[in-house]
Image (cartoon, rainbow over all chains, first blue to last red; front, side, top):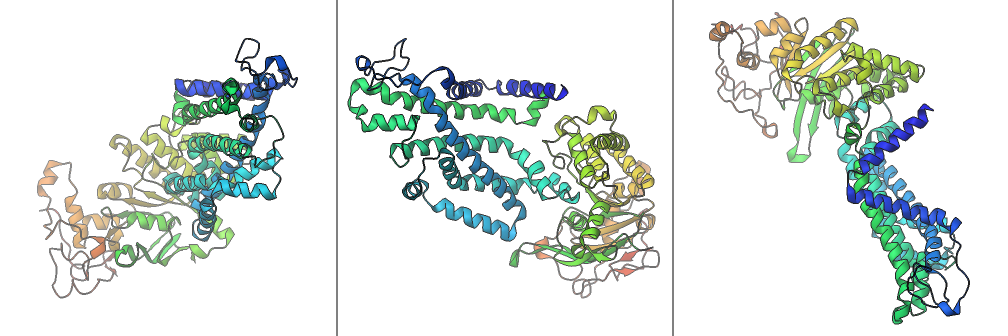
Length: 291
Length: 331
C-alpha cells in the first residue's frame, strides 16, 4: 500500500512540476494523446479496408475526419493504425542509442587512458560515416522488414554525437568533490557512474532521448519514402510513400491523402520537442522538494 | 609507535615541459596514531595537493605515501580496502562535496552497505540516524530525508563529516574543512571535530591557511608550515607558535591579527623585503623564501636549497641561518 502511495505522490509531483511550463505541458498532453490514440486506438477504430468508389478523395467531414484516399477508404483510421510502428521503431532506436551513449560516454570519461582513447576512436569512425547512405547500402543486404531490427539498426548508428556530449558532461562532473568523496569511500565505478554521474545528467539524457526519437522518426520515414525498407504495414511513412508514388502531389483533391500523414508526423515531433521543456523541470531535484 | 601514515619525498608536478609546476617538492613527514597535525601555508603552497595525495585521490609524480609501512599504490586488495576505510577526506566546499540528486539518507547509506558496516537497510537507517546525531544534526529524523540544497552550508559540512564517519576511519584529512563555513558556525564544527578526535580516536591532518585556526585545533598536536611546495618548519604547536625559528613562520605569525588591542600594540611586525609570492613557474633558486627574507645571506640562501633539519627545541627547520635564533614576537 505504502509503495503504491509513494508512486502516486511521485507521479503527482512530477505532473505538477511539468505543468509549471505551459508550452511544455501542452506538449506532454499532446504526446500522451497521440501515444494513447496510436497504441489503444486500433482496438476501437477498425482499419477501413473496403473500397468505396463513390467516396474517392473526399475532404475532411464529420463522417471522415481526415477525408478519404484513392479507394474511398477513411484516412483517419489509417493514421490511427499507422502510428504504432513508427513510434515503436523510433523508441527502440532512441533507447538503444541513448543506452550506448550514456554507458560508454560515462565509462569513457571516468576510466580515461586507453579505454577512453579506444571508445572515442570508435565513436569518431562511426561519426564520420554518413548515416543515411550507409542505411541505404545496408538495406540492400539486410531485409529490414523486421521492425525491431530496423530500430536496432537506426539506434546502432545514431549514438556517437550523444556519446561525445555525455562524455564531456561526465568529464566536468567527475572533477566535482562529491565524486572524489565517492572514490575516497571506494564505492566502485558502477556506483560512481550510475548513482553519482548519471542522475546529475538525467535532464540532459532525457532530452537527448526525445531528440533521438524525433531523428529516428525522420530517418525511418525517409527510408520508407525512398522505398529502401519493404512496405509491409500501413504506417505514416508508407502512407506518404504510396500517395507520393501514386502522384498525389499533382492532384488537388488528393491533398488530404498526402498531407494527413505528414501532419501526423509533424504534430508528433512538435509535441515531443515541446515536451522536453517540461522534462527539464521534472528532473530537477531542487524543484521537486519545493513543490 | 609505528606511524599511521608516512610520506616520503612526495612530489607532485602539474603540466608538461616548460609549463611544469612543482606543486609539492619532495616533502617527508610521518603522522603517529592519535596525533593532530595541521598543514599550514598560503594558497598555492601545495597543502591541498599533499592532502589529496595522502588520501589516495591524486597520484604522486615521485615519492610515496606509506600506509602500514607499504606504498599505497602497491597494496593488495585487502590492504587497499583497509586503507580506504581508514583514511577519509572532508572537502573544503560543502556545496560541491554532496551530490545534489541524493538525499542525506542515500548519501550516508551507500558506503554503509558497500562496506558491510550494517547488515540490512533497517540497520543502515538506524546507523544513519546515529551518525547524524554524532555530527550534531538534530533532529536527525528531519534531516535524513532532505536534499543538500535544503541544508545550510554548516549543515552540509556536517553531512560530509558524517559521510566520512560511515566507514569508521582512523585518519581524516580535513582540507580547509571550515573555511567556507560561516564564521559563526566555524567554532561549533571545530568543537565537533575535536570531539571526534577524542571519542573515536581519529587522527587528523588538518589543512588550513589560518594559523589561528591551526593553533586552536592542534594545540596538543603539531603544525607543519609549507611554502611554495616545501616544508619550511614543523614542530609541536606550542613551540612553533611561541618560538618560531623559520623567518617565514615568524612572518606568518606576526601577520596574525590579535583581538586584544593591548597585545596588538606590542606585537612585532616582521618586515619582509617583498610582499609578492614568487610564481610557481619561476621559483627562485636556493631557498624559495630568500627574495622576501629579511635575514638573507647572499651567496648562501640563493644557491642551495636548505635541508629540513631537526632543532633541539623540537621539530625541524629548513633554515641553516636562523634555526638557532629565537625571536620574540612581542616587543
